[in-house]
Image (cartoon, rainbow, N blue to C red; front, side, top):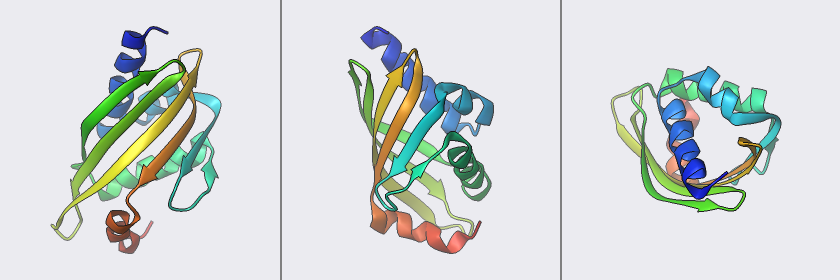
Length: 128
């Protein structure tokens, strides 16, 4: 993939997540992709990650990703963003994050997400 292809892919991926389009998000992942988060040090499968996306869509229906930095790598991309939403009680919320994405054959094989644990803490009381 060219740098332009990678950046276009990254933008489509974020748009699919923001739009809650589970099929489009799943199509971005290789079947055996791993998704890791710094707050729990657990590797998720694609299926587990899709359950997390479903939860986000239900709990934070107005989420917006504001990309602050996006850079192509030879085998993926790095993105820094702020996720903003309204919590179910009406409180505005935001969380800073950075993802390092590795790709093969035009699909994500690994996504490492680094999020601000203090900002993520507001989500703990929302239940599953």
